[in-house]
Image (cartoon, rainbow, N blue to C red; front, side, top):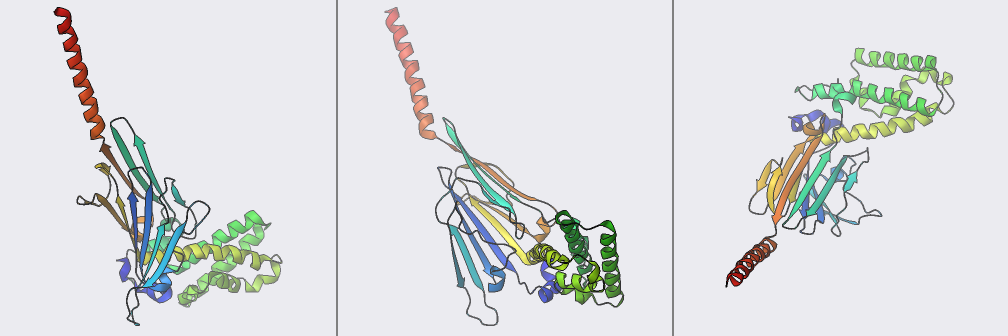
Length: 321
């Protein structure tokens, strides 16, 4: 459904990107993560789904290669891999792109080891932030009606944030809100919704141009920074509409529980796939638990029990004699 919405191709110029995240869990509980994204070069370099970058905790190695030679439809592959195994939890909380975590753990007991994989993809809260986009995605219509409430959200949130950082009395806030509402009503009446495909900060300035002198001196400069940040998040959310994701996890031992959509018995690899619709309004959780029985320890323990029993019987027999 989402891949058929041509309006995003027109206004956001984003093509489908396939993102593959493979996790290999080793016997000692450490793991390696390998990211592979396939699609248009510009889409691979945007900020909706960012591959991890080297920091003080982990080193990541990234490569970008062309997969097809066709100039009309170039396909590129971006690959990022963790340089060395890690046992620490990976947490990605940057609000300007997809937020998620990867948590691997191993618990060792006398006779067995257990392995656990957990990951949570934070939902985008589309129904809260942009309710008209949520409605629009459920119908196949070629209009831009969703842009207006989306911009309204960006404007109203920007004013709220601005007020937490600067003084702005209630009367001025009401005037700003009324002016923006009037501007939006005019645009809707004239059916100029395409105007809202422009940068949000530019629209905001145009809407309030008539009351510029009644606003604080650095008002437009300061609120533009806020609007641009919110718009970056908006662009991330809309860019993700044409992305798909597949997590695969190779986990040691015998699988005990999982919510994976596919399990490969041949190599003990689990697969989860999700798209924009799966994370638009809900979290997407993945988990798997496995166990490795230590057969050698069990055999030795059994042998010791047998030897102890034989010794016990042998001593009883000696006492009788």
